[in-house]
Image 1 (spheres, rainbow, N blue to C red):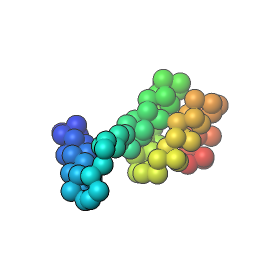
Image 2: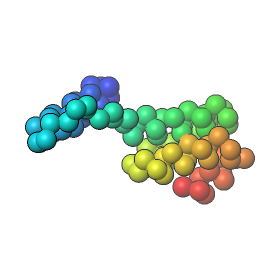
Image 3: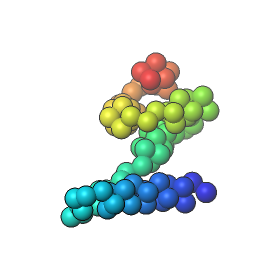
Image 4: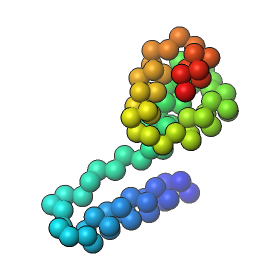
Length: 88
């Protein structure tokens, strides 16, 4: 299950944070990249009724948070799926 894998991943990050001195006052907020990838795909699906499997896969391999943020903005503004695919 994807949700459990994400939870394990986040717990490992937090465990490393508390293990290494100095002890942090707060644990960091973790926004999984998967959520950002799905947000881009969802906006495209709403705007264009469907997203081709190849484009979904191209989005899902992107791990860079700033690139995903930019793609999310672009998904709201772009005129067509073809233009979006070229922008990746």
